[in-house]
Amino acid sequence: MLQKSRKITFILAIISAIIGVMLTVQLRSSLHPVHKESRSIAELRTTLQKELEKHKNLLADISKYNQLYYQYETSLSEDESISVMKEELARNRRMAGMVSVEGEGLVLEVVDAHIPDEHILDEHMPVPVVGDYTIDDEDLRWLVNILFANGAQAVSINGHRLISTSAIRNVGDVIQIDTRTIKPPYEIKALGEPDVLLSAMKLEGVEENFQLANKKVLAEKRDKLMISANNETRSIQFMKPVKEKGDS
Amino acid sequence: MSRRRKFHLYLTVVTFCTGFLVATSIETTKLTRKERINDQLFQQETQLNDRILSEKEQNRHLENQLIDLQRQVSKVEEAMAERKSEAADTLSQLEAARMLSGVVAVEGPGIVITMQDSQNAANSADIANYIVHEQDVRLVVNELRAAGAEAISINGQRLVSNSSIRCVGPTIIVNGIKSAAPFVVTAIGDPGTMESALNLPGGVLHSLQDFVQIDVAKKGPGPITCFCR
Image (cartoon, rainbow over all chains, first blue to last red; front, side, top):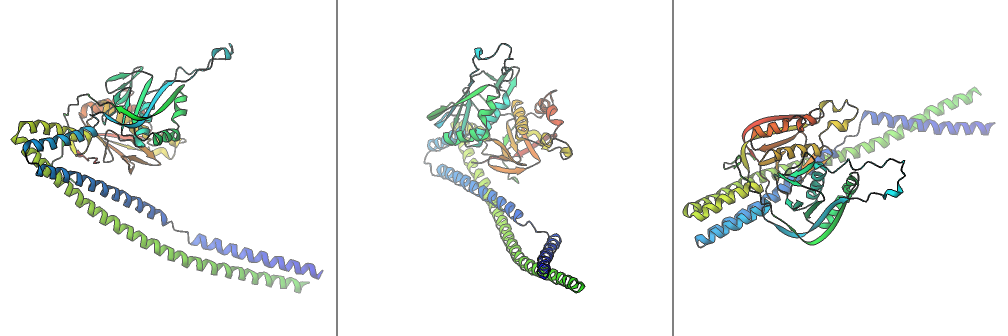
C-alpha cells in the first residue's frame, strides 16, 4: 500500500514538472516570436552580388573602350585608324549575330518518334491520336530559351540564325522565323558547351515535352560546328544611340 | 489518508514550480544568446548595407567614366569620319552594329508594356493561371519582334542575340540579372504597329488579359539601357 502510493507520488511529481516546463515554453515562445533576421541578410547579399557583378562588367567595358581609344590615339596613319575601326566593327557585328561563328556545340534534330507497329494494335482498339498535336512556336521558343539560358552563344534553326530581333511564330500551319517559313524536321544548332547544354535539356524535360507531340530529339555533340550569319538586312528607323549622359 | 493527499497536493505545487523555474532559466539563457546573435546579425546587416552603398557609388563613377570614354571614342571616330569618306562609311556601319549588338544605350519612339500577376490571383482556385509566367513574357516579346521592334528590354535589361528569359519563383532572370514583378517590357519601334499587333483579335493581349494584368502605354523617345558585355 505504502509502496504504491509512493509510486504515485513519484509519477505525479514528474508529470507536474513536465507540465510546468511545457507551459513556460509555450508562454515564452508565444510572447517572443523568433525574429527572422536571416532573410534580410540573404536579400542584402544578393543585392551586393548584383552590384559586384555590375562592377566587374563595367570594368571590363571600360578596359575595352580604353584599349580602343588607345589604339586610335597611337595609330600612326589614317589607314591604321580606319583598320582599328574596322576591327571594332567586326567585333560588334559578331556580337549582333551578323557574322558566322564556329566552335564546339550541339546539333539537335527533332524527328518523328517511332509509332508502334500497326499489327500490334487491335482492330477494335482506337488508334492513339498523336498526329493532331504538333510542335508549335512556343515549343521551339522554349527549347531555344533553355539553350541560351545555359550558355549557348549562338543558335540557328534550320539554318536561320537567331538574333536579338528574331521572332518565332505560328503563321497558319507552319512556323516562321522572322518572315521565312521553316518546315519539319527541325534542326537546331547551338554553339556552347555540349555537356552543359545536354544536361540542362535533360533537367528541363525537353525529351518528355516533345514526346507529347510524338517527336524525338536527337542530340549530337560536335567539336567543330559552324553557325551561319544572319544575313538579313536590318534597317534601323527608330532607334538612335543615346549621346547625352543619362541616368542609366 | 487525507494527510497523504495533502502531501500529494503540496508536492504537485512544488514540482510544478520547479519545472517552471528550470524552464524559465533555460529560456532566459537562450534568449540572451539569441539577442547576441541578433546583435551580430544587425552588425552584419549594417556592414552589408555599407558595402552595397559604396559599391553603388563606385558603379556610378564607373558608369560615368564609361560614358565619358564612349564619348571620347566617338569624338575621335567622328573626327576621322570628317577627314576621310572611307572612315565615314565604316563609322555609320559601326554605329548600326553597336546599336544592334546592344553595347550602346539606344532611344526612340516605342511602347512600354507592364505585366503583373492578376490581383484576384489569391482568391482564385487555380493560382497558377493568374500569375505571369516566362512563356507569357516570351509571347509578348515575340509578338513585339514580329511587329518590327528594333530593341527590347525587360526591366532595364536589353535583349541581345543570346539573351534568355527565365523565371525562378516570382522573379525573372534576363542576361543573368534577376528582377521582380512588375515586368516592364520596353520596345523601340513603330508604336502604332506594335500596339495593333498586340491588340489583334485573338492575339497576345486577348489571350493574356483574362489572366494577368497587362498594360500597354505608348511612349515617346526614351532611352533603353544598354547591355554591355
